[in-house]
Image (cartoon, rainbow, N blue to C red; front, top):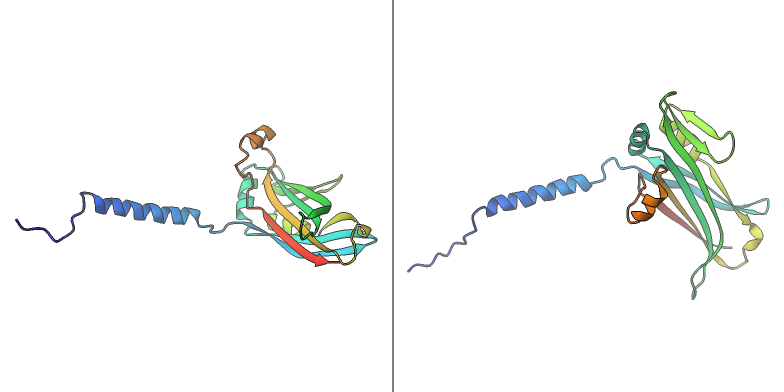
Length: 198
């Protein structure tokens, strides 16, 4: 009885391999972040202004297509910048010295056909037909007061950490807490850190 030296594959294995290759290609295409929007922090400066610790920076939205589409579809968004200043400790956990949060809201007004940005405080509403121009003008120079400069001690090391995210405002709190593992950010949040010695 002669033995076959050639390898035999079960029926349909070529088709199965083709399906796996096709699924892999589809997965790769679907997960590639083509034209994905990103948040970038620009010109971060920490300085003393009239005895106060001031964090100054700008925010730039790279490729704002996703954000614009969400706004045109009626989604309301909130920009939140959380600035936290820590004193660096080598043995124990870093100690928070100061913190401040800056927020504003974004939406599309279908009646005036303009994008709207609402800042904190009265009479802080800005509009423009172009989202890019509106964000460039209103996000290029943000200032956060982190408290008195006298809280800093000479010779100590500090970390300024800024987290920026843009998420939906019309999600009920009960849903956010129920689906705590779900990200409501329209685009990925970004965190920046500035290390310095006073």
